[in-house]
Length: 352
Ligand code: ACO
Image (cartoon, rainbow, N blue to C red):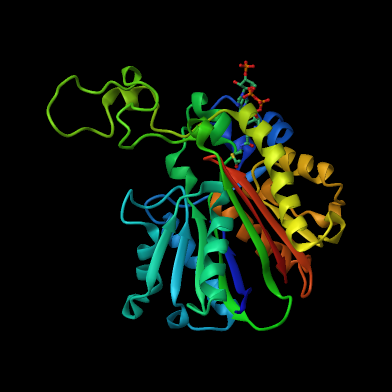
């Protein structure tokens, strides 16, 4: 059995900066409200009609491939994590393969839908493939173009101000170095509150989970259904919905628990963590987790201030930035942790 190491890493964020003040042009909000509640100062927005979740992913992937010192043809599997895919189907993995120009190798491409936990779920999947010797260069990407799917009306402000666009990618490779690479991963979910942080339209539910009345489905008994009704459009139901206080309550319990689980499994203490890279959900959540685990400022990396919450992309973007700044170094014990829609959550411990 091999261990899985991150042999290359890269990220890409679009050029356009959207500050909190810029958002006040579109909705009733303020820099003060956003900073105080989330820590976010600005986020990046991709150029609509020119960039997509897949093209952002491709820019990050190219950097990770170069960082790993491999050729794109060496990639033997793709894992793509996103909640903002280019299409309902097919998934973005095959689009990334095409965008990178590696269709000739006809490798497998897997899309995963685990939202904020997508990168950790993806890393755990890549780890299983690599340590068994099945693949040698798995390209794992988290990418989001949220800006195309947010409600810029005041009624969407509690969600819209939080999210930004960006992509991060890693190349997962086998290593025979003892004690190096991914030491453990832990994945969890609980669907009880699935709709409390969700975008439920379009979808095949036809009102099943929540009752049909509010959606305006046509009253007929003909076969076939409809994903989107005029009422859904009129009532802004096509945008993400979040019960912020509930998400906060769950996140501050599950983040520390899943980190402790990884530490317990490997026999480490929180003082052994050289760098915790939490999913950049909200600075207040990260600070709460830091406090519970009694970590120093030097043990936690946050960059949500600059990029907002980039969901599946937030961990690889932060990990790459931390590495580039010399805050993640060879031999460091790095902990990744996430919580998000589903609810899903997870952690990974890596000896860098
Ligand atoms: N600007 C100004 N006012 C706003 C905004 C905004 N962007 N959004 C909401 N408000 C208003 C509300 O309308 C409400 O007004 P009211 O009292 O007149 O009704 C008031 O602010 C308070 O609203 P709450 O939703 O109760 O605000 P809260 O203090 O809970 O803060 C927040 C909201 C920041 C979302 C908080 O609940 C939170 O941190 N939750 C965690 C959720 C999170 O971080 N999600 C990240 C994405 S999910 C993930 O990655 C895990």
